[in-house]
Image (cartoon, rainbow over all chains, first blue to last red; front, side, top):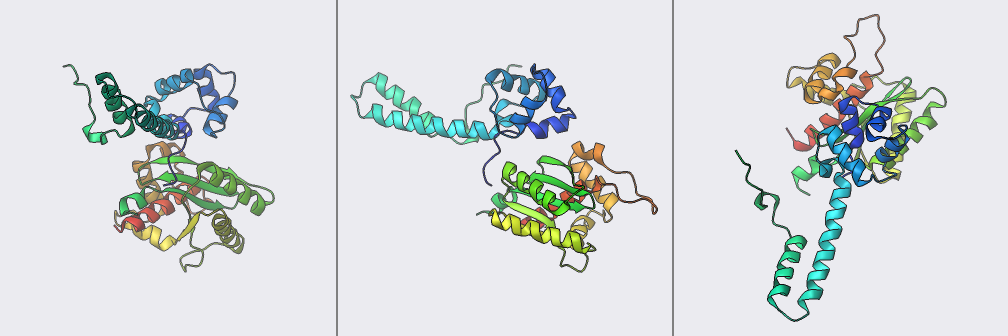
Length: 122
Length: 169
């Protein structure tokens, strides 16, 4: 696939049966123009807007903004790999080793099914 | 590419109508990304091409699915036939593969579940995508012309048929 779309707000809005003006109202905007810009990928939402969208559509931010989320993850991994390499070139103290382990964990995360998930309290 | 990856490609399906066209964007068989009817009243060919161009620019699909006008089961008029060919040419120009789906193949794909006419197929589609239920046209009587919202369901039919063809089941 040509990669995920930056966001899936339009699909979720239509699924919920809401108009752009109504979503704008929920987001605290004056009219639907801003929502239209989000839906046409011409503008990226602020953290506040993204969290409000999560609340409105009852979907996690990383699903609503799948493309942006993927890109952010890719960039952070690349930076972590670079930083780990740079730190590894320095002296090896326990603190540095710990940092490298953390950075390598960011750069090459385990497969989805092996990731740590907190145990739910009954 | 693996078979699984091929079935999750993004797909834009278009179904022209006398007054515009219906479209859907699918990501795999269970994810409907966008859908709707675009109204085109004047300068139909140029306006339709412009709107499809915008949709391709926005969603960057891997495949454009349209009706196969060359198939014997197609009952499209010359205007729509020419328009569909131009849409396919436009898709090729934008590096989007185009996949024509014949009406016969679409109906055969849905006939497996005993849904062979447009109304029954729309019913089956609403079962898969409940968000389309509000747009489902009423059962058409012989004296009624086709509801323009039917174009959305026809586009979904073509898209899902293409996915069935990719999966080989």
